[in-house]
Image (cartoon, rainbow, N blue to C red; front, side, top):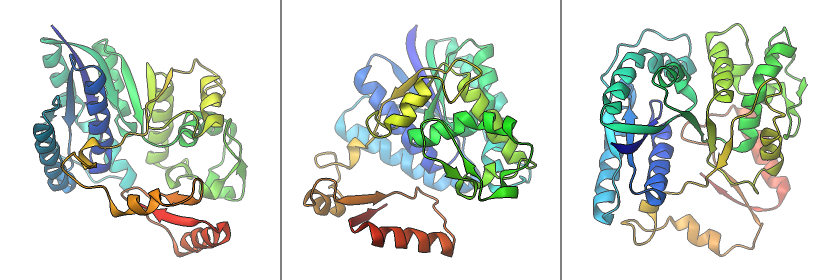
Length: 309
């Protein structure tokens, strides 16, 4: 039977793209493997997901590159969620039975060497354990973010009150600068919400995985990488292996790959080394007026050039 790797992102184009890029990286280094991406898509994400998958297929065909297989899981009905973040957790949980059937079917014809999921898919860990398939997490945040997530179950045990009750409290996480509670992700501020419990359980499951793959490189955030690798962020259990494989950059948006480079790169190449601040707000960055004012003030005081994404 053929060796296979299965990737399972949560719903949304911003979760699918890193998995596709990672899948292409795997095929570059291990062309004898088959790589399958399981796609579970919320109705609100269906159009953008379908368009992106079609563009990937066309780019791969034009480049005559090894191809990823996309397998779409059946749709499921979604109840009214308790919050926006909870939508992703609850949708992926409802897709568990479809996931199990798909992995069982694939196991009849392939040896699944690794099952790689993202943050919102933690409930699928039970399926991989039942089928004896090693499970890994693809972490698309930076090492500092990963250090915070891995350490957060410890924070949860240390405090009986919610972080929202003392937003000026400074939180100390191994390998990272102190963080004011108000700067933590909103889902982690109120321990009485469902999404808070989802996050804590995700972080526990991540620490029990076969490994964590980071879309970064060691020299970028050395303190966080060293703290995680030394076991400081998971003080009560073994820390899984950490694999830095980034940055993941699409080969299909470079010169010679069917698309020209972004105009901003021409400007960036003309700047002096270490003279530019790069801000990336992700695909759903939303900020309050106060936060935007702080960002603007900080950039003005830095005295350096700016590029944003």
